Image (cartoon, rainbow over all chains, first blue to last red; front, side, top):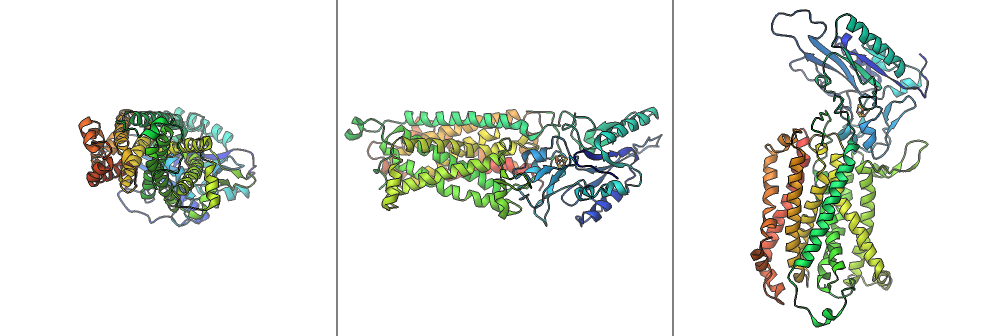
Length: 285
Length: 319
Ligand code: SF4
């Protein structure tokens, strides 16, 4: 596979064919040497729980199986989705990162430089997708690198390589978008009209390099919808203006207090003096 | 601000160190401002409290960098905030749209002014008697001294307020749903600074004459805080954030925070103010007699300021 620096690469994750086998999770952990947190065994098939410092792919399971007799489910009785860092064009994590550890690579992916990150966790507070997290061992932020090291060796990312149903597709973003559009058309022509693309155009965070074909509303998959796709910096102006207003009011209050306090008995010496000298050696000796 | 916004951000684990940094930042910034305003007013009688303000600023500020650094995953890399290490892109890290980046520089500059003023009052108080130090401080006698104090106050106000903006510039519930946190933290920072100065001025000779001013400004700052709190609640209507913060166990923190506003509000009524400082010329005596009660009240105000920050910082975290 030819992977050229300077081109945009990403994932097209087609959830309509995901079978929830978690091969992507295993491949990711194997290649990236991530032991991962202890699995949990609860009510469902999800033993991974969430994306995080050690879970760079996470297969979500959404159980929609009705209690009464099933009709044709059209693939929606169970929704499965292999979630991953979206490698957002306008990335909230990158926007707030104070060290510049979060950078865009020559493959147009979002990458944390582990030797630059100092573990301030500002990216965690910003990522609207619950992706990036400080690792408890390395004490730096970690997330999917889109297999940066493999791309440099012209190898596709481990998860895409291993996915047995081609739910995870890797390639140049423009080609993936084309492929995704056709897939949606095919599904619609088959009557699966709920299928749609999330993040394939610039409506979500300027476009997601890792975008999805979904079978239900974004919120169902814990993805912010279009109205919610806003960056942290939206609050800079309001926050500073609010502070500025309070600062002006605070100074005003302090000055009023200075003026309104009961006048002291003027000492003859100071009363004759202009109020200029503010720095003297008197007082407090 | 954006009622419809629905994010799925993970909490950043900013807890106790950050909470106390925010608390100290408010005291430091507020003290510097109060000290400077007292000086600009030009009444020599206020100079002891002004000097106290500069001492408080510097000493409280000393606690801030350690709190911030310990909170990092990699504390020894704290300087990565200032110097960019990305290959082929060396230079200063300055991202004005990221309050954390801006804050690093704001804190550095404020610390510089705080250190200058601390040094200055040490010399003026004859605690530092080197001739060269005296000559250096003589430079600050005129306009230059005022410029330093005014610039320092601007950075002090920034440090007291940006901490709230830092929380808001995120995709966290509550924090990013309101524009009021910067102003709210600034107002409560001013009130906490006044409280600290009121407590400590008991131990500073000649500070009694400024007591009435401290009481009055404590009340005014409390009113400002109440206004900001109302705006905070109003700005969060319909976002789901109110339900998240005004619930148990955070309600206990809110209760303490709100109760701590009562002394400031009641202080507005003239009878109380007159009781606090009665009689001319005997002010020191009067203040000392009620000093312990005042100090206890002000300590309660400080606990309330901590609770307010806790009630805003902690609820976004998964416990
Ligand atoms: S999904 Fe989160 S971690 Fe990934 S690029 Fe977007 S903001 Fe950053």
